[in-house]
Image (cartoon, rainbow, N blue to C red; front, side):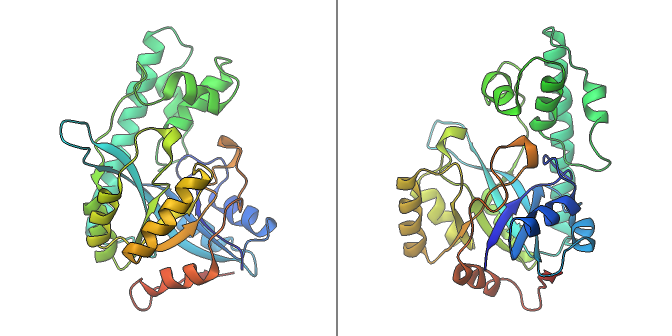
Length: 288
């Protein structure tokens, strides 16, 4: 089996519609794909309706979170992948609604700052490009900058203008990671720490922080990810074994927003089955 447990659609910051994600998964020879848009389950229905024969869909989401930094330092932004949870659970609905509002306002303010600095972007126009109900993200502004000829690619936009700490960057108020783990578990799902050692993205957490999340109910670590160096993959495998955590592999597919193709990294089938076993009884993986 070939299993990719991290992919994004136009319901957040990917460029393929949900139906396109499952179609791309099938074309890439995947047996299982997870749809994990940022802070939304809005693409689940369309993805399920379009499932090709022989392809299974794991329904999930990527939660925007923070972990407290060492004493005297700022919180560290992290992402948590939630799988197989009840999308109607009150805590999930409330927090995802709040996070989407945070994302929308951040995108508006960042675009406004750039417009005031002379860049040819308009907040109203950028927000109007989002599909109805989509979870806003910096890649939407990055694509507007590409379209305006300011940069040549989404990667260049992030590297030069939209990175954390940029004069145009605006923080959002994210969920404490332990709280998000608890919400996902209460909703019957399982939580996996997304790309925990993606150092090129900024600060990363230490082993102690991961151990604390494991004690709070974290089910796994995303080990095989395009942003993880070989030494860090080995470190995470050792930590997962020590803490009895499942290990996953994923492409973190975003369509044309990133160069990594779907299925570039995959999850071991035995680890996938172990992850499913940690979800609530009766949770359904949809089959095409």
